View 1: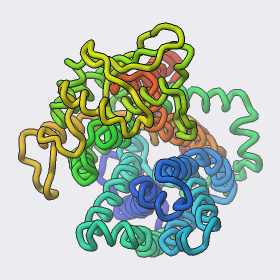
View 2: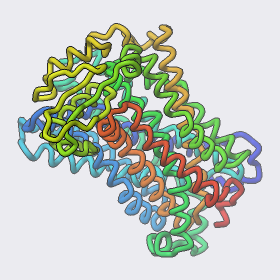
View 3: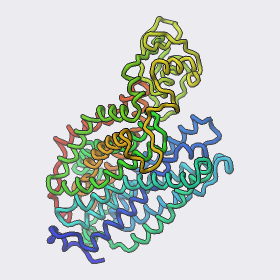
View 4: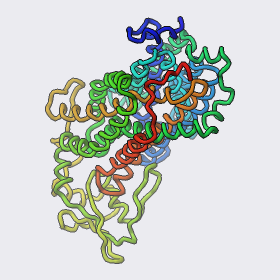
Amino acid sequence: MSTLAATAAGSSKGMTKDERFVILASSLGTVFEWYDFYLYGSLAGIIGAQFFSAYPPATRDIFALLAFAAGFLVRPFGAIVFGRIGDIVGRKYTFLVTILIMGLSTFIVGLLPSAATIGIAAPIILIALRLLQGLALGGEYGGAATYVAEHAPQGKRGYYTSFIQTTATLGLFLSLLVILFTRTIVGEADFAAWGWRIPFLVSVLLLGISVWIRLRLNESPVFQRMKEEGRGSTAPLREAFGNWSNAKIVLIALLGGVMGQGVVWYTGQFYALFFLQSILQVDGYTSNLLIAWSLLLGTGFFVVFGALSDKIGRKPIILAGCLIAALTFFPIFRMISSNANPALEKAIETVKVEVVADPKGCGDLFNPVGTRVFSAPCDLARDFLAKSSVKYGTVAGPAGSPVAIKINGTSVPYTKPADSNAAVTAALQAAGYPKRGANPTLVKMSHPFDIFQPQVASVIGLLFVLVLFVTMVYGPIAAMLVELFPTRIRYTSMSLPYHIGNGWFGGLLPATAFAIVASTGDIYSGLWYPVIFASLTVVIGLFFLPETKDVDISKT
């Protein structure tokens, strides 16, 4: 493939054949990496039953989610390891290695015997594979974004790198499609028993395609020129993070850009799915289809906002997306509730539920990793109400008094265990809370194209708005990160803030937000997490984040 340096002079022209191939090869491989990464999250419940079967069901789910979270937690470490390699050895070979690690790890999960067959070795190997996936993803994104940006002509980096920005959403979309298709073909019973392995095994075909395409790539012309001129870094980690002038930019990029982008992105895609399933009680099939349709409708806007950032700048689009999201998350999620589960929304607005207890017997329910076990009656009662999607308040009762639950002023006897408290459940239903599993007002899709019901169309429309926010903050972010740092330490410098912002601030959002819901008794209170961090990014970014669209990265 010929060098693309000459395209800078003709940036007003369309893409060349070489440029299209660079974008295709980089984006396609990254789509497959995200596909591999998200498969686990989509199938966490089934994986918990397969690999943590020695534990009770609730504990299985906790371990499965913790293993899922482990992949997010190690992403910054992958960014450090592979970022250093990418800045020393080169972009092409580094992200060739990352896709091999990701693809093989995912394929092995599909072959891994369950705990019933090999015992404790099964969950240990599973967690090790999940950690490898997180490390690989930590190196993949920075490599792909840097590689494409260093091929892009001046004035079109936002547009070119926006195709990389579509990959996470397309990877999630692809994983949902493969899972839905497999479930439909083999049936729910067989899918839970063995069919869940098929999406993991299919990844080896995607891996083969990705490796074949990437082997045909040449090194980035900007990196190659830097190496030929002897301007490369021998210690990119020390230069990137040991030098305050660069480390300061890393912090500004994280706090004034990627932190807000990460929470908006995970709210619009993952927390929205979690909110539908776990709080609004929409069935998994319908929830996945609703999210899939919103992603399908919204994905093209990554490119729209990426291209727009070439004209008006990266900073105004990213910060505007964070600000609009922070101002509208609460009303949008309330509208999702009123359309997806009108009976539940009405009950939340009209039924007053209070837990009356001695304050000394009530602890803190904040439990983002799900490992705490509650035993006090007050805590059990509140935990039960939160998991039942009931809005409640806590009222101080006389010292030493037993716990009581008041529903519209009427006290209902409380007995343990909370998860089978029939009296409270019956009273809630009599007051207006819908019965789980028998709610005629709940949004329901019977097939993928069942989208013209007013209720379904309304929910998809609201989810599409959330995805639109995602495209605003995410479309220009790769170009901005690439432009903030010099070529010799670009891979290392841009990867770390990206993966802390997305892997930690974003990846831990669903569990933390639900923990806030459980501890406050308000199904919308978890939204304070993204609202606060997105707002902080707007303030920090407004004052400290530089505009980068006119930076010539071939000279840095």
